[in-house]
Image (spheres, rainbow, N blue to C red):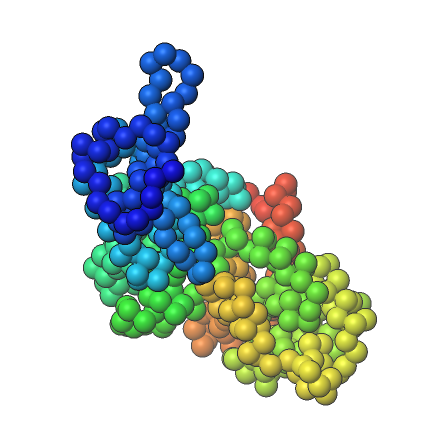
Length: 413
């Protein structure tokens, strides 16, 4: 073996050296020469090697074969990776990440979007999948040819900012769909694991985009097609907040209404829950038809957590805090609010059923019609609303066969 004393190699030496060994060039750079293989024309194998220390250990980083990488190029690579080391990063790990990123360059946002939309099989009607394509073509076309691994916050803002105030609802929808596609890209390995989604709202874009002008600020809602999978996850979670949130979703009620529920309000035989006026936003008593699954949830809760409150807190004499359900959503990194499930219910009704809008509004305890019309309303349509909520529960269960009544030909309100 040759001496490892630091010295500079020359291009002529690199070409002439044939004895196996490692020849130092300085700064940890070596020409590594190995013996020739079998065969009359076999030549010694020469490659560049950079040796460095990291966290008390020694690592050898190959810089390429000497017949392809010149001495000057090898020195430039050594200097490049030495700068990486000085910055506190590991050169080999950084190179692996760089190679992985380069391998992903060929996969565009449009490629992932096409595959993701094709996989939206929970949409019964193909036109709902088509709506994704139309939305992205109209408002996010600039992203389609961009390598999905390179989509940045600046790219997302460039799409959203021009319509954020003029088309607020559309902008929110576009943002949600961009986020879903980027999440899919990361799950498929096209985006480096651990990299934050540049289209996420909470704690990111909500700090960069202004509050939208005009009208009511809508609560971020989970896409209705994603609700069954979310509820399945809730059912697998063995803690009280999951039961309360599932019950809230099944009944399409507000947080205050659900967490304030007392057993005296619930008629298990009649399968109805009567919420008193003092807990209703409209200050009018509201009857809620209870589906089979809602009754199952109540049975589980009653057996496990006896109290005057259906969903009690840490102390059985107090109701569960309204912050508990929001905390669950945050802990699971769900970019939607608890109140938003009421919007999910409304969107499902419009997209997948022919139930009247007014019936859904009654189910949500919204005021329907003007003051005069409401003064003549004596029927809260409990049994018709029971059919609507049964269909909602069947959809959440994943029962696609016959659970949702067909769309009628006429235009719905």
